[in-house]
Amino acid sequence: MTPPPARSPRRTAEAGLTPAAVSRLAGELRLACMRISRRVRFESTDDIAPHQFSVLNRLEKAPCTPGELAEIERVSAPSMTRTVARLVELGLVERTADPSDRRQVILSLTPGAVALLRDIRRKRDAWMSVRVGHLTPAEQDVLEQAAVILTRVANE
Image (cartoon, rainbow, N blue to C red):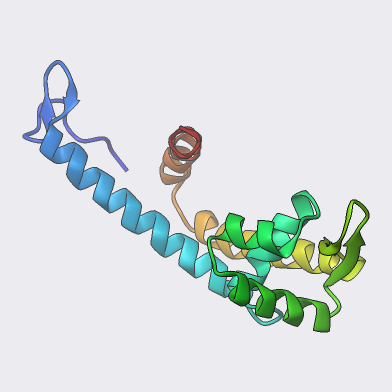
């Protein structure tokens, strides 16, 4: 993959891409990131649904209440209650009473959930590795640079 010529209609001599070109590139990047994210999410959904994986991923960081999870995941409390109930049924999440407020429940992962998360991540990484492995060395170099830049953009 070769970079575009230094003086193309998409670029200005002093400032890089024109505003219209920046807007087009932003849209292309957003769509590409969404498509890759969707493909990776659905690659390993044999065991649990993507929204359940997301909840387990959040609980891996720290135990929390169903209300906190609903807020973090931006879903309604009843929706989170259904998701949590299913994860408890599957033996992936444990409920324990909150020691400071017995009316509250604290959710945490079971050892089975930790193992499942590791397996799903391994499958997702393998899927992506196959695709990146089929690229040319130059394309792999570009993606290596892009990963750093996209991480910076995501963290802004």
